Amino acid sequence: MKILMLSTGERDGAGRAACRLHEGLGQMGLDAQISIQQKQSNDPRITGPQTALDKTIAKLNLSYRLDSLPLNLYHRPNRAPFSLQWLPSSTLQRTISFDPDIINLQWICQGYVSIEAIGKIKQPLVLTLHDMWAFTGGCHYNQTCDRYQVACGACPQLNSDRESDLSRWVWQRKAKALQQTNPTVVVLSKWMAKCAESSSLLKHHRVELIPNGLNLTKYKPIDKLLARQILNLPLDKQLILFGATLGTIDPRKGFQLLEPALKKLSSSGWTDRLEAVIFGPALLDAEICGFKYHALGTLTDDISIAILYAAADVLVAPSIQDNLPNVVLEALACGTPCVAFDVGGLPDLIEHQKNGYLAQPFDIEDLATGIAWVLDNPSRHQNLRNYAREKAEREFSIELQAKRYATLFSELVSAPKQI
Image (cartoon, rainbow, N blue to C red):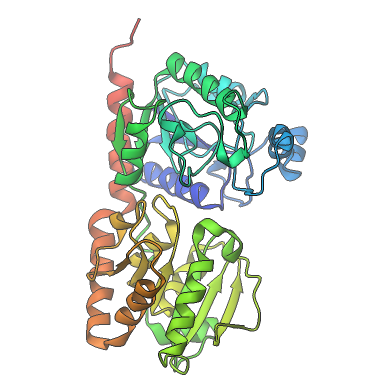
């Protein structure tokens, strides 16, 4: 069985997850190839752009820029990601020489694979949903809009009151493509399963729940003092960790909600006990609400990231909407308790007061309470750490994820062809 996987990125959250799955399938001895639009590593197992023209397009991010041009017709105060996928795409034609038995589309936005190209796929197709894009009119997260359950149009993220806007056009193109190819859908969280099953585009398609997995020999607990010495972090403070691909500048990841929670902790007497650590872009003053913080920038290798999780006492992921965030999964595998709002796929990862704390959605006081609850009792903190690792080993190993995908792929490849 030959498996072809496609992913736009390699180092963004979805891209890292896709490459991990590819690694897991390879460890099983399966013939899996992954093609990446924006290849950044030297990993020979990952295929990137081959021609000089394709490499130039990827380097300048031209596909994304051209794909986004029609959005300039709209005044969008909210600049949330929105993908049209309208550019003619030769990606599948170039990779089809691999002669795959099955194709798995991971996150293929930013102009990588057009909607029309998806509709032309003849092999069994699996769509992995890292966000909501596959069943919306272009947005990646719906925020408070439920029009994806009907047919999109009058899109609030486009600041549009017209039914026949770009979102309706994207929705119509997807409806046609999905009818032509009839994919099987893989979701990462129970929340995303409910969203897909309530959507007008995917409600009649098969939906399978397969969470992401990790290499648990890379992401594992290590000595906290050693981790801090390696990263030059203080040895005598409790450390709160926040991180995201776009760091503090992505409103969906909720740093703007963490700040007032830190302010409450500061007023409760935690100032001398705590410091904050941030990875990813951080546009901040010298202190955060009275707390000293350490900005580590963008980390790309598994070893550095795992050491950072081990150095922290708690990870806070105050997302407004999220699927199955890598940062939480990785932190739990390293034995670091997590605090988040009870939204999206976060309850799949965090069991309240067992390996972290789930605050009532967007209740700043409860978020601060959760952080303090995790940190305040050393014995309880150790129990949280132990259970965090146990849950990762039980539910989120790369071996379990790859096995589940391999079983699904085999079933679809061996199924009788529909005429």
